[in-house]
Image 1 (spheres, each protein chain N blue to C red):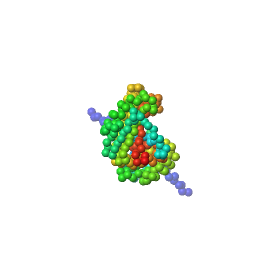
Image 2 (cartoon, each protein chain N blue to C red):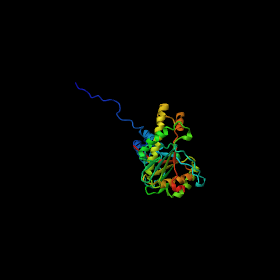
Image 3 (cartoon, rainbow over the protein chains, first blue to last red):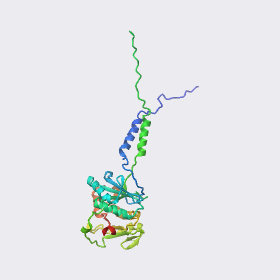
Image 4 (cartoon, one colour):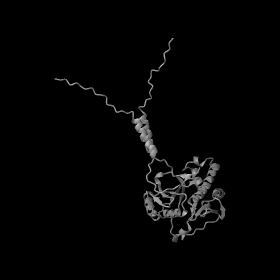
Length: 137
Length: 181
């Protein structure tokens, strides 16, 4: 007796018509959730590590100050002098009254420059600061 | 009359088979070019700036004050005792705990003071220890009082309010000597 091979009569292709839609949905998700980097960081720095850290809950309020390993200070997108911080930050505070200043300072810096920046921030009455650190594991 | 033959229209169709590939490329571009970085750090509120001539000297009793001094060699002095940085939390915890039930004007004040030449990393480590001490005390308080962990508490809940009132984090960043003058 001869056996005939059974073949299913249905088509054996995966329907790919909706694939672009699915991918577009993924794409949209990524476009909405991520923020593009706004400024170029001109100084090189390595952040210190700490355990008892907290997240900054509202990213829109954050304004950054970078201090590189060569002691240069960057505010917004340009290198700034120490004396200019007060004026710039004062205007920022007028625009955003509860601004949080995130200090991204290289871990080998001296405290001298840190206290100088802090004094400038106090004069500009930007009092909420955050020492940016990485999580120590 | 010549009969014009109606040409049969071929079905107009855009080839969509490569659409998926194109959108995958776009997706990849966004995946690569965006950064999801979470800002983490040690939060602090600076004291208001008061010009030197208007500054008043407010005495704080020795009982309330925990002074952390860090010099340029990385030696730490806590209340006139030389200790290592990892010991700061352990030393502070009992002092914070004994003041939980005192009124708010008797809580511990931790003052951190550094030299101009002190390494920034050391300062962060010391500050981290101080914060860690406070967090541990808060955690312990939340567990014994409410049977919950801090993470499970809502930021605006009554419990959180009580914890913040009982164990306020008061860290004073002392003005460096050269600025004072």
